[in-house]
Amino acid sequence: MKTTQPPEIVYKPVTGGGSAVDLQSLRKVHGRGRQAVTALHDINHSIPSGSFTAVMGPSGSGKSTLLHCAAGIERPSSGSVTLAGQELARLSERQLTLLRRDRIGFVFQDFHLVPALSVAANVALPLRLAGRRPDRYRLEELLSTVGLFDMRRRRPAELSGGQQQRAAVARALVTGPEVVFADEPTGALDQASGHDVLELLREAVDDLGTTVVMVTHDPQAAAWADEVLVLADGRLVHRLTGPEITVEAIAARMTVLRG
Ligand SMILES: Nc1ncnc2c1ncn2[C@@H]1O[C@H](COP(=O)(O)OP(=O)(O)OP(=O)(O)O)[C@@H](O)[C@H]1O
Image 1 (cartoon, rainbow, N blue to C red):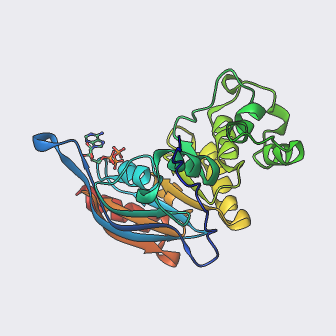
Image 2 (image 1 turned 30 degrees about the vertical axis):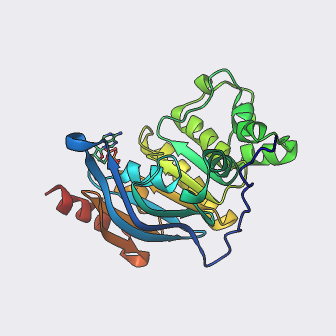
């Protein structure tokens, strides 16, 4: 019997100047009927390849929903998302899983490290899951970059929160992803540890050409970005770029929204 396999993804490399994430008329409704909540209304935005974007907005404004739709974790209700050159609606679940595994990195507020594995094994995990043998030299270089080489044999519980998050950033970068999505990566950290994590994300953009998209509540964290998107009630209500981005300007914008 002839079986029809979904075609493997043909990756279009995202080249300089292109967009890493493209959102067209993106709309997301959670739930149905009377329970329905429109979390995103008609969002149009392109995130340039090799840039650092911060997504801000009051609680419930749609930040996580935007991140999840852009990363292919949630399907939009309508509109389109193009991520790393792929229009997500055209991909099967398996293709989407492969795209996320091979081309995308994730960093979460609460680290999501595997407690039973060493730091080195946690960092190498995305490669193992992809059936790729980690290159020892590259892995050690990455562990050194995030300042964890000497701690590589420890378990996550033997690290501070900041060290755990640096391990999580290394894990997100180990496959050489085009886009890293970070959901409140400094939310559980003190200021000094948060600074270290933001510096690593900034270096990934500047040195490796990675695109970083980060949800944050913190104007200090958002000030590391090249562009700050501000959401309110599921709409993109403001953008700050370049010299407009200062901690004070971001904080002032958030204060206006909180009323
Ligand atoms: N699974 C869901 N089912 C129903 N409503 C949802 C669901 N997820 C989110 N929502 C609603 O969608 C809206 C946007 O939620 P979202 O989590 O994206 O906001 P957020 O800006 O990330 O909030 P926070 O800063 O509090 O994390 C909110 O009104 C929320 O209650």
